[in-house]
Image 1 (cartoon, rainbow, N blue to C red):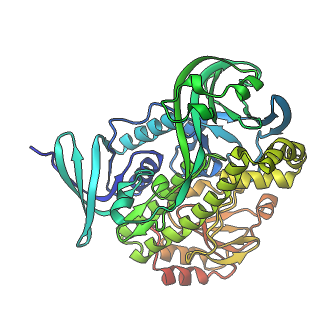
Image 2 (image 1 turned 90 degrees about the vertical axis):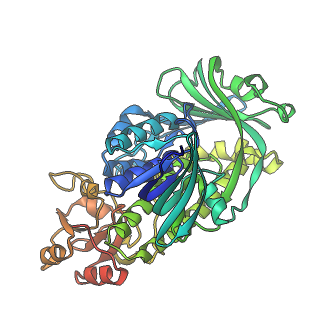
Image 3 (image 1 turned 60 degrees about the vertical axis):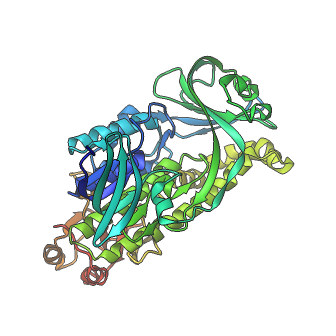
Length: 509
């Protein structure tokens, strides 16, 4: 007998971080979710490591940030070595102080990350349908009809929407016929979780460059455990690569003694962005939409950003609080950032791995010479943090973005203002996952009545030096989206109603 099918609001294909986060945010907003994955269980080896500040800010909205922070490891510094000589040390510490409530670099391995997300989904009585592969799907009237294959046989799932969170070889993307242009880098790389000792197994990040070799060392939670990423010897390509085939030059430069290899794998690095992130009732999220080099620890966090962006829009449309046209904003908001990110990481990765004479001079002479001086400048440190932490992502060109008040424009991430009132900082109200109005100073007359009539929560924060420093304007009105971005920045209260009517959206109330 075939297994019974199921019906839901959103069918999610793929139970990696992007799919799990999408499911969790949708569930928090009352959306009926089913999630399928062709593998038997969650990953048991760590892949992505970095959890950026913007991801932690999203997690704070659903009560997850504190747990991730506690289970992860903060990284105090970055070290650059050249041919075994220590050339630069950049103190990370709380490099983003005043920018985010999470102003540091955090390591939290992907396998543990996925397990935590699964635990939280179970609190919503959502289980991943394992060993269940999406074969194909089609739009059927007012929804999607998907054909699944599992150990118990074929089954059918019906949903209003489908989200492809199923990785670089996405079946959703293939079914849609969406192109995935880009390429693959020449080099083969390895990743290994090892136990070891030595001066560079000290809880900090270390990178060593040589003429034709490099290795990066990332600390893991347990002392003496690190993640290594490096190059495979040229002569080892073309057969099954083992730890013994790894180039030892850079590892020896770091004076590291590896006593045990717990996990080892090799991979090729790709750089691709899908031609479209949406077709009809189907959406692409995470690696199904974009893949790029691991430079900067951006991949998983970008996929999570996709999931959060899409989740509140799907919830609003399914809940009758927005016109279906709201979903048209997902692709332009996220594809623009994905394209820019792939271009940026491509340049960085090429600089790290290229064997050209110019690239070698750049990474072995120029970068070590200027990096210490650059990191002594506050502007450089803040720019670096905003870029890597993804707190600098903005949607100013979106049709959901309007106005300017102070230095803050529609489409900007809401600037963080610490201790804005006795109840907490100005991010505390974002846990509602709903539209809301913020005023820093005194609310204009009629603000309470307008917000009440629109089902908006009004949050008035005392004016402070921190608010001014963040670029907010005193007594201005900021209409905040459910994902913590500014929809409207204005000094005219009546524009709030005009904005909502023009975009055909409303708060849950």
